[in-house]
Image (cartoon, rainbow, N blue to C red; front, side, top):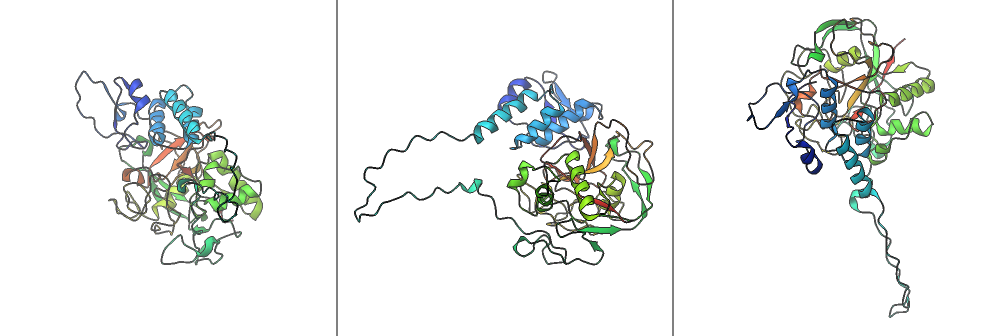
Length: 401
């Protein structure tokens, strides 16, 4: 996904990076290069061979460089221990650790008498945590029944009322939408070579897929049961926020737990199934057309509600024609497939495209931190399956057999 990556000035970059943030922009690539004086060497990402480790490292860094989550920098160092931004990542980790360390308090002086004029002993009021440290009251879980405002339900309870065509296999399971078999054109002739060549894919069997991304509440049900890891980001998120900071390996734990709990076959969607579902029967750049339209996706150019710090609760934006929310923006979504740098020789039957010793897995859909150009239905990227990153989440699929 090489869309509109900024020009990065490399002259004297070592000193500059240590003191100032880079321009805010998520992973992508430039479409054109601007002329520059010969005395100022420029690196334009689009000039680099696009499917190179150097380009992916730059893309990774661009997506996390303004993050306040230590886990993002740990993920970068795990993926690129000797990378060009390794020193800066370690410095950010040290600053975050220092900021979170409890400050030593001087001992309190002994009370002089402990009494007021009225003879009553006075005690200082209990200290309240600062507003930023108080967990926000979690919004409710997304409703299964249609309401005037998606994503709201009374008292945060999980609704058991389903819309027509919806499936929920347990009270804390994700709501699923059943999709029919069908055909579509996968990929794009846009500038990103990873989306080429466009190819005809036939989904031969109906399948079910999450109406929403997996939420914090749903993840916590698995963690409480011992089937999933406890994710630090979860403690700071509302119940109906999409769970994030999860790796591909974490997502595999969740679908394994769901399968064991329900007796059904849960899994991550294949990349072809994901794009088939995300397009919602359309062939345009976005499911709503070829131009960005506010109110349809959770990204920094996509309209309210939006915050740099976290994605909106699931279901805050319009659903696509198949009734799926947040396939554009919100969080990147893991899919089952191993990463391939193009669709050359890709399967055309909708199955996952895997291989032995897969070093990278595919993520789809963009996140709330990216701009509008990342919201197109064909956008794809990759991460190591063991990496946790605060913009990455997932939705589940289920076989209908």
